[in-house]
Length: 370
Image (cartoon, rainbow, N blue to C red):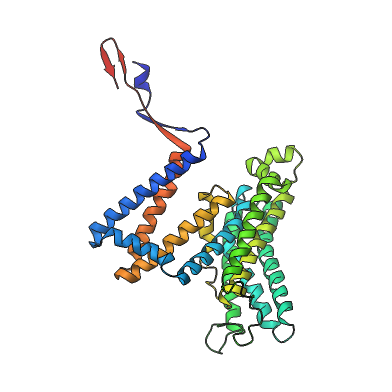
């Protein structure tokens, strides 16, 4: 029997280092393929013109100046949480609790707005909001970090359960602080006095958030790429055993990194309350804590590429909502298109990291073996 008969018809092997332009060429080709598949699905299932569908998706994010600012705000908030969870992910600490950590930041900020409005001037309230929100998020990240470092608990389940505790805690205080009484909602906080409302920059309500997140993106890129802390995170992520061997205190790195991760999530919560919504609800984080996991992985933990990944997901989400409104299609159809595009994008990473090899036929003794 020839050696060729003993080999599988198809086998997968890992690629070497792929140049960045090749990787993005593959991603671009995959996105085009995804759009073609979505166009086919649209035509077969609804009879609508797929070109009009795509124009509507674009208008969902860029159809007016207000839509553009809202899109930029949503991208900034998703990017902020994605940047927050990235240090933990690079350390191979699976922080699935960003939703709860962000919500605790919202809670800390809202508590200051409500409890201190008759005590402190505006600047002092804002200062307390930032400190309270960051500390609340950091504590929510610290608790699972301590259990992981000391008793090696499962951080995925632990951080996930912390989300539910944060949600119920906020739900309780939404009733305690409800306005008007009996509504079960807090409503807009300090609507008349605007105490605790962040200042408007450049005449745009969301510009402050965008500038803060832009600075955070630069900070995180430098922190992870050019500092000793970033190096230690990378070493722990590669191998805890190696990290311990070279003298790195792994427990200390875990706790320190999760303090940073939770604190940045808390800062995002402060921005959501103080600059964007001025209220507190159990859904204020909007699922961004879970979406941030996808953003971080799609960008391969690179803060710069996270900007593109965050924009793509927000663009698809807002476009899906616009489709539902403009064509009278239910949300499920919009989600189908979004899911197809994301499936193709995530699948493109396979072709970037691996290649498919087919068994080559050989001619021997006048016979071709395949």
